[in-house]
Length: 501
Image 1: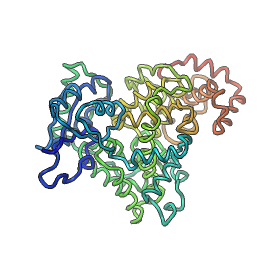
Image 2: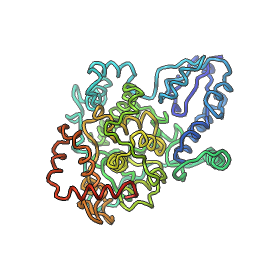
Image 3: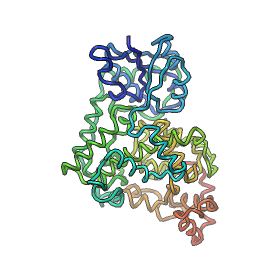
């Protein structure tokens, strides 16, 4: 018999198995382990737990008799039950903890990672060639585009520019409640979902496993078939208008024209190559403009690849970076996703989206949730854990660089050039979320002072010594000297504390 191959719960697509390996009828048997300890250690979003378990069980159902699906307390126990003392192969897991586990187990052969475009050794060579410093995403992205022939027009970039961001930062259409694009693909639940929901209810009732958030009808693909349908619908109906409004926010249209493919990619249901190739074909066929296609390709071949490799390249010590010395614990209203406790309309609306679906797009994550955490001085390690647990596409490799490096600037600029935070003016310009709010984006002090505007100036004031030497922040820091009410801002923000804004 062929050596069994172990699939983790985020290695669910066909590219994690070699098609026809060994010839017809001789494919290697597959082992899958559903470990309850994963959910016991952390309080995950209920919709995320549902999605992961549903996806694993759908994959097992598709593999039929080829798979040994074990439900156990831990991975070690499950593997012992599945293969005893026998040998097993597994592709490089996506977390440091899982990689340490499989590397420590006798009889386990760890194969190269799949599910990404760039191999580990290729990235390390690229990064080492720059001395491990100034590893900017834009440079990496262009290197990937050239190396893989992505979205090129002859020897140069499609559309004459590598970066079409200046065309992709439009505020939402004036007066629009929705973007008016066709709805995204949404799956239909089946008997497997019903079984998952029943098991999660039992875990909560009998085993003391707790979740956060709501588990409504499943919104994201849990099978290869569903993921391909979601990809096809995005490319055909939603990609053309994706680019211009990818940074915009509308209260009544949280998904805008986003692909909603991140969870499918991060579960391994889709391969990044097929996603960017489909998008490029749409541009070459005249079915989508270059700025929209470039924006989508940048998300996958640029940012997603970049974050994956920085997770491994920076090492485990990166998790503890905290150059701003932020140590406040996130408050209970945030941890419990208590959107109803929040007065600020923007933050309440986005927190409700997380509570109800386990998802928001990248701008609410960065410029509302992350920005508020940064302004309030919450511990970046705890904020990273929250994003990991509460988002359906959250994995350790995704959230560690995104939160520690980009969102919380805890690495002091090793990954990004400046802190990503703003006052209410940015939120007002890029959304309709300020309309009807109890606060005014232009007010720094007083009963209607916007928490983001006051929080922005308070953040700059607290970290002036660190930020005034940053060329991209120096002008903003000098603005503190022009504030006649800075003392009032300081006192107000001390009083505000970490209560819901």
